[in-house]
Image (cartoon, rainbow, N blue to C red):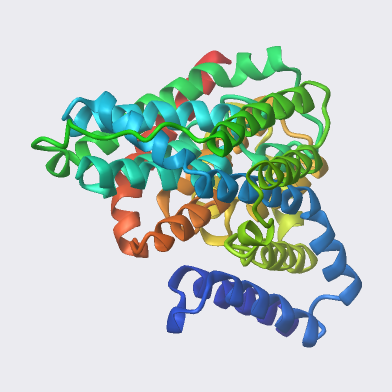
Length: 416
């Protein structure tokens, strides 16, 4: 190993550790960007390559902008409070029933709007529901975080990482369902059972039953309509193999402007409350991956995939498991990029590619840095005055992710 490669790996590792640990309580984006800047300043990555890496994330940036605007607009128009009151009333005093309602809602939101939407849109509503019902919020919030990843391979649009891994060319829906329908069910069911068991001590007693529900305002109704329209737009975009970022951004911006005009509110009130720091965080992560690519990591991964192609079942199980855990080291979007490039070079059997997708989608349930959705979830709960540390999440993630991953990969191999 040359000194340059060693220094590149050291900087990428330090930046990742900073994102995980947040020294001095600085935002995650600070450490990712600092690592990217250090790589460029020291000449370990050409500036042109760094700019190219940032450009690779354009579809993700647009997707996030649309979703964050949509979420903040809905929050300000009281939609989350209305959803929260509806869920709390539906629980009829049972924390277990409320937990199940949140989980099912998370499945629907992730499936049709993506796992990032579950983190950005659903999490504030769930916290509001817990507050109204006077229930312990943590089991419900963990349900949001984990189902955002566990249900993220039900449809191609359920996770932006799906688009990254398949290089923008998705399999037909029929082939998708043949590969992932049963593994998705396995991941969702096992995750629910493991999380329900892990949080059993917090899901006891009774919660409030007499909960007032303020009628939805015209702005709230418009926000709900905007979310439904966005889901339809995403489904159509996926069906016609169109990248999701621009349609999502247009839908989010259009909904925000329309509602601001409807209720006579300045769009600046929405813009100033959006967590924009997630965009430089993603950009920094893409630069770190580009540096790893330049250091030869992806070539080694591709060579390994070619060497293991003689035994597809073993290769699938090993590759899916390794990527699942590896996604927690560099985040699953960059990890998906590494895997996608390696797959393009190695051309492994379809079952191996499918296993990699399961790993990159489900693996991030292990830690708070595993996926962008989990980082967005963390930012959402911090806005409510809560926080979950790395070790606290890891304790829950280890119990839920590992059996769910085994079930999903095992199911995919049984399909053949």
